[in-house]
Length: 254
Image (cartoon, rainbow, N blue to C red; front, side):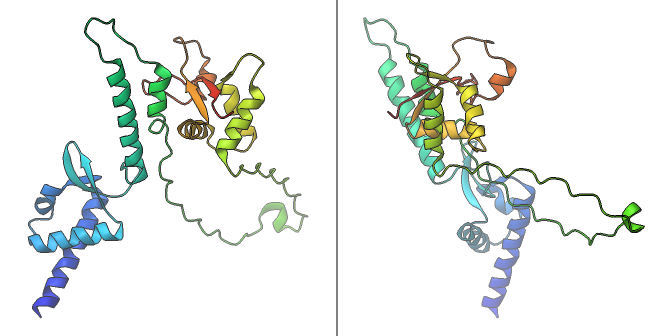
């Protein structure tokens, strides 16, 4: 009886945790008991472990504290954390190389190299939103002329099927950039490249550019001045860490 009562208490705490995470984006681990009005410590620990094991919750560091949160695009896990670590290591190496040395003039950093370190974080794809179920449509009931027996209007022409997406978007990025290169001018204007990728069936061309930069296939360079891009062109460019449009690309994969 005691064991059955314990299991029932744990199930109750688990349901309360689910409800809490449905209302709050994240809750500090140290405050869970207070939010749930003081459940037994063992029951709370087992409820948290159950939600973590089922993937319904994750432990995340927020504001320097451990929180329990729902898995969402606001949490970085697994490979995304590895990308953060890789970017941090790359930036740390650049900062060390540029550190002032006694008796030497100050050193600057090459912006494109900083942007390359951050390419895995800026504009990186987020988890897809859950699929929305398709509503059932009621059977068609004729009205108007159709109800009087008039012949139905000709159906509208079907929209053309979208172009198939290439198997490897990185290959599509390089191929499109190569087609836009001009003799003696290795830099490709990113808005033109984005339009070319859209024509090739790439649904998210800015993300494809960032992914190709992460893979070392291309280099993305920022706009050299302020306010030089037309608004439409600027909207087609991925952004660097300071918000500057990355408006030029150079092929690294030769």
